[in-house]
Length: 297
View 1: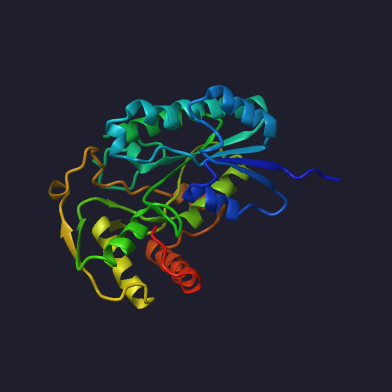
View 2: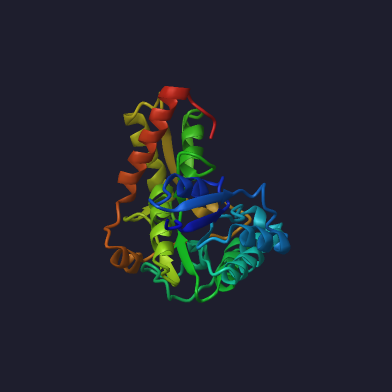
């Protein structure tokens, strides 16, 4: 009897970790380890967990993603986003596993006017961005590093769920209109992570949904589609504001569109426009609420 290949997912209860577990490829065995089960500050524990499971594929879906809080907690952010990544990569190599790590558009400074290519120079503006950039280096040249942006799904803390909650309680929301990127539905990201990982595609890859948007554009689309699906009882007013009108501890790139053409070519799949994927996600929300009632994200 042929033994099926084994995958180990670190950070299995986050929104990406959950999506990965929901999309385990046929003929693969998969185990998820949550942040509560594994202390990512403990390099010895990381080695022990990986050695115990002896995976063929090791996927790191865990991250410190509190962008603003990272400015006051740089050591904690670095421990999770960089040092733990190095420990995972080393532990994976020790047992012959291919390592997949997920990174972010925040490794760029947003000063360009074209989509960033995987090989473009990094210049992060924030503690979060710097720790994620360091994490890419810690993953090593043999790893698969998948950069993404503006990730959302039905479960978890993300922009779409936040907008739904806020729009249900206010008549007006103010959203930044001068930060440009591309929203990414976690379902498509999970599929790309699996495919690149199984194919052992080393190096840096980009995955986002197709199209371009500001946070304001994204919010308007959420309002329109949520109204159409009956998720909102009233039409809220979405007001565009500038980054200067909404100061935050961490600086964010003004333009962080990622060029995903290499990824799409290798996988042989066209990208889906972000608005089409937003509709699919909101349908999931509507179906869930019809069955279980509204839930605070």
